[in-house]
Image 1 (cartoon, rainbow, N blue to C red):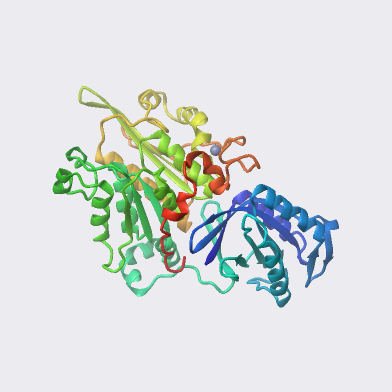
Image 2: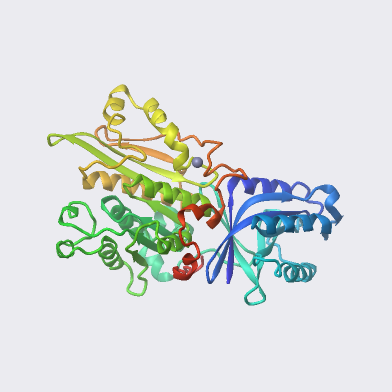
Length: 481
Ligand SMILES: [Zn+2]
């Protein structure tokens, strides 16, 4: 059993400011969290940072910190009432790479044994931070009656910030991978390639656009790729679906099987890591897979599915990359065409629900009058049903724009553009301002929003919420991740 923590950037800044305000003494605070649970992993989703007021400390020195039992008791009552898990956080402010002390060991065990009797089962863990926010973490595994390590902590910002617990190694590359990805390592370094190799990505949509993205991510060496799409191949797909064969289309193969078979051939024989899932993204099986990934990509033409993926990403604090394309023609002449890529970091950048209101206006402001006339009236941006014409060169450009943003987000090798728009006729790519809606019900850092609510936030979508855990086979964690 391993633990992981995900925290929106704004809450991370609050945590950092609280813990490092006075580095001459130990400081304590608490994190209220939802959890995502699978057989081998518990993900703590931070919802709220609760500082300890001065009068709630019993004692506080450079080597010891103790809070009043009444303060902790009130928090436990709140956790029980509101269904929260609790992470105790304190500092060892005299250095970096902190480790739990013998005193921490005794007091944590005592606390965990007390709180495990709360009903429903209560997730309780603790974190100790150094003066540079390096950390060691653990939580109580009540099934096995033992402490389990919290191995990594992810901050949702661009580029993504992933911290590993004291003594734990970040992802690394073996010799074979170094040879395989040599030309990319020359572009964004061994560390960057190692991050890509450790990523678990869910890609929803294996059609013209999705297959371009899957191809790019496979060539880039993304560690695990889950392809989700219920559709079957038709002959009319062969002008744009990468890797599909004529025979497969004739026999009506599922798109995800054709794509996985083709892409797995580019990997070493023992490293088949493209996983096909031929079902609707909103099914319980697909949800279990989505929740097990580090990143979600939507390349679908259904506005309903995109909004669903956006909601899952907000609830589970998973970055979401959305891409869409559209072409309009009249009497065989191409009139309008374009596409967009949006990078959504829960709690940090605008989500799909935020941009729905503002994006049209923003795009219009940045276009020339001629472009505006051609592009905006086409109505193919954000959330629109894709009109019929589909061409491989547009999918290729937009799919690779998404792959590039993903590389920047994961490796930090260049600044991320959170929204880019491509105009097919003018051959222009330009960034678009996508403003966050501070009142957004989905992504606002606010007690009432769905941000970090885990399955609590998805109940409306789940007809049989209990089924998710049973049917979802956990994906084995990639090496080093
Ligand atoms: Zn939003």
